[in-house]
Image (cartoon, rainbow, N blue to C red; front, side):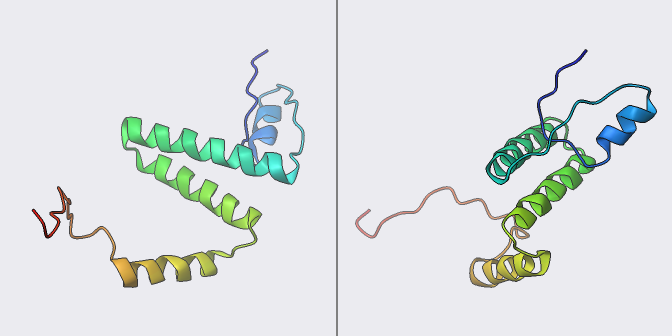
Length: 106
């Protein structure tokens, strides 16, 4: 028996059953779900940072979609927020690295 105690994708229990194993699961309440989504986000970001695999980016986006859904924010609403930030503050396309900011007194 292997203990996981973590949020998994919806089809994982069925995949486990097809392997003739028996998953023990439970449904999370809202607050637990948010906490587990946040843990999962940390987990998949860490995995991406370790190997720079694009598949890990897909996992990050899927977790973000779960977070948005739990907050009743549609992907379209999220995109509006994202685009607004790009319009006001820019994106990250120009590769600008800010080293320091000098104050007028310096």
